[in-house]
Each structure stands twice: as C-alpha cells, then as structure tokens.
Image (spheres, rainbow, N blue to C red):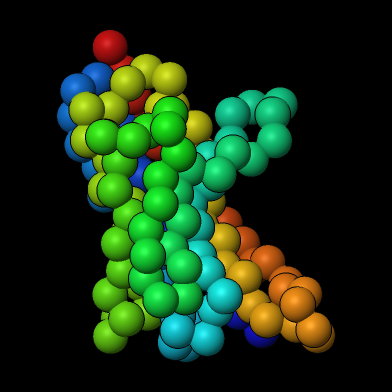
Length: 120
C-alpha cells in the first residue's frame, strides 16, 4: 500500500509562487515514476510534470519555464515549484506514483490533492 500526502497549496496572487510537496510512505525509488497532475472542475486530470525513476524531470509545455519538479529521496518527497502563477493555474493538484505490477504493468496511486487558488 502506498500513501501520498500533498501539501503546500493555498491562495496566492497572480505572479506569485508556491511550492507543493508530496510525501510518500516509504522510498520513492521503488516507483516507476512520479508525477504532478492538476484537475479543473468537471475535467480530467492533466499531467503537468513527471520524474522518472532515475530522477529525470519533465514538465508539460503549458507550464514550462514556470514550473519545475524535483525530489529529495532522503525525505521520500517530490516537489513542484510553481512560479509566475496565473489565474488559469487555479486547480486541485495531485501527486501520483506508479508502482510496478506484473510484467510491464503498474498501479498508480494518488494523493488526496491540494487546492491552489490564484487571485487577481
């Protein structure tokens, strides 16, 4: 069983910054990869940043240049640094972790989400 706990969301003015954290129960090195997603009301979750098992980061074009993803293995934590926030970044942000299953399959676990609200 994997537990993921996000934190760091809140209310911020446009142009401001927030850093989200996701703490995993146990080592993050056992995961195939981890990622940050966001979800707008009534829509599906959107992948915005990933970290491979080796720690290689990747961010979606929609947030490139503003968001960065990183990890601290010693703390079993990944981060999403969000700068130059825009109104359209308002969403619930989720952390996901892919746990190896049989063969090439994996099981994705989710945190409970943390809400980010950007105000004008």
